[in-house]
Amino acid sequence: MNAQTPTSPAHPADASTAQPDARSGDTPAAPVIRVAVLGAAGRMGSTTCAAIEAAPDLELVARVDDGDDLAAVLAGSGAQVAVDFTVPSVTEANVHALIDAGVHAVVGTTGWTDESRARLREHLARRAAEGVEVGVLIAPNFGLSAVLAMTFAAKAARYFESAEVVELHHPTKVDAPSGTATHTATAIARARREAGLGPSPDATEQGWEARGADVDGVRVHAVRLRGLVAHEEILLGNEGEQLVIRQDSFDRVSFMPGVLLGVREVASRPGLTVGLENVMDLS
Ligand SMILES: NC(=O)C1=CN([C@@H]2O[C@H](COP(=O)(O)OP(=O)(O)OC[C@H]3O[C@@H](n4cnc5c(N)ncnc54)[C@H](OP(=O)(O)O)[C@@H]3O)[C@@H](O)[C@H]2O)C=CC1
Ligand SMILES: O=C(O)C1=N[C@H](C(=O)O)C[C@H](O)C1
Image (cartoon, rainbow, N blue to C red):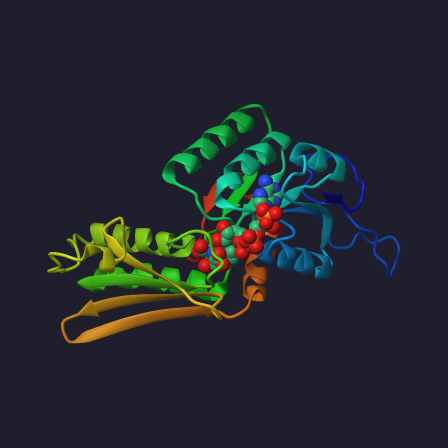
């Protein structure tokens, strides 16, 4: 653990603190948000720490790693918002601890299910009834190209007989299919149901293992390849035509504008928000 700066205790209603204006000395400048990063030593965590340190309106107050006492770090650092880029097996417990501490959460870690999201909603409602309003934003993907690709795919899905998703990632990724592909396939499935479409045509009788995972009736294929970062292709087909929507994150910096947007917005959105498209007003 590295609690960077000892500051005042966290308070959920106190989303930011005014900084003195360096130019005049008396005019309040943009407020500063105190941010903790969970999984700070990881690929996304370290990129996030650098992005926060470079943002004039944000202050990195704690780097939390495996084995640290999260509650103690939160109390000691005065974090108002925490960003979680850890691992699927610990992220839910982390977010419950953040809600207990009254710290808003921006979560990029994968592994969330309907059941774990329901537990968060219940916890958030309990805290709200106690007078503590906490915002949690879970975003399967913070990349602008990915959020737009998911949004376009959901809009296009109703017009096509067939839909399949291919996600392609670095070989050190521990989960498959990706959270992004699961979110995409779920949105496509919802749009297809609303349009009264049945299953995509598929005459497969044997060799189902080659047809990818079934996510809400949509086939999702996962590729792991050295050299890749994070990529997704949505294939939509009709007789005689095809639409391919593709996005590529070549570098983890592509996720940072979305992460910082989440950090700046989460306090003003009490309760659970799933998907950056809701914060970007794309939904
Ligand atoms: N939403 C989005 O836009 C994106 C989401 N992701 C997701 O983010 C997650 C992290 O990805 P990535 O950074 O590549 O993975 P890494 O494995 O590089 O990082 C995870 C880090 O979390 C640490 N960690 C494990 N347990 C804890 C704990 N209890 N408390 C604090 N830290 C802990 C790990 O430490 P140690 O190694 O010592 O166990 C590691 O440093 C994944 O679920 C991934 O799918 C990734 C990219 C973008
Ligand atoms: O592990 C990754 O790298 C990524 N994980 C997220 C996911 O599973 O969708 C987001 C992005 O694809 C990168």
